[in-house]
Image (cartoon, rainbow, N blue to C red):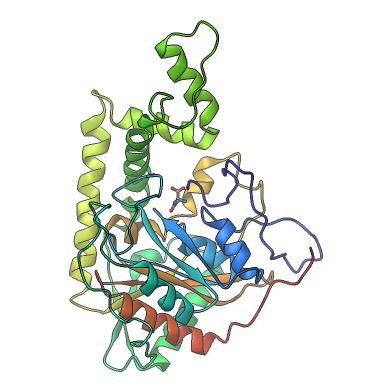
Length: 367
Ligand code: GLN
């Protein structure tokens, strides 16, 4: 569940079915963390798959592979049976070839589950029946702060196209402001590791899961051996960051501050809904990168989440749909963020883009 490249999977990384059109055969990341799902759908191995999205792991792999994926409102889909990464952010959702399949899947996956204390006890709307790409009377907000310095020109261009498509579907496009956007990524990379360190403390070799008991080991040795052998490097990095930001001397400086920032980000969104019904933004700051390209630089990897984490921190429904291909022939995703519980609004805007983008590209079969 960690990372945006799928390279931190305990089973080894998945390779994207896509290739750049430069004649090379460099293996690309299928996105992450749900890169197995995205690769399988885009290679037409299956019509749809599930993913979990803590800070973009449904949306970003969907964007990297030219498919659709929706993270519903926090609490819509049960987390029961999913190993917790950051419980206050984790949310399951569907990934599929198109918006309609996402709606069908989401309807089947949503609903109250008494086994998940954060599950919402609300009726599940008929999202598929409610699909409509007529956006007359709807306002689409373009968040000014997402247009960051040094933004990839192709991402900026597809974003502008997305706005045009939504205007063509009848929506009014308005520029809006989410002033605390720049603090979302740092806040996420405090809150998510903090919750991960707490959640993963239970994997100590005592109660369940792996146990490593070296000869003559005491209890502490068993904990250490089990955790050293059972967690991979990225998980260990996050546990260490999380333990640090939760430690007595630093708790207020990091964790409490991050929680305050989270509240401000949620408030930004709450205020923006007075001006628009959905938001349009890029899903990721780049097209798929090559496997290995970011793996020595965790910060570069974390930066790929910049557009995905604000909606996660606010618990909002958000979807990625393919917008087009970049000059390297790789898919670029557009993200729609909606009001709490307004998956229908998100799906409908996604459908309006899908109908106009005419995205029919598929990875060439090279394997
Ligand atoms: N890429 C983000 C991270 O590494 C999000 C992962 C996810 O959504 N599971 O934390």
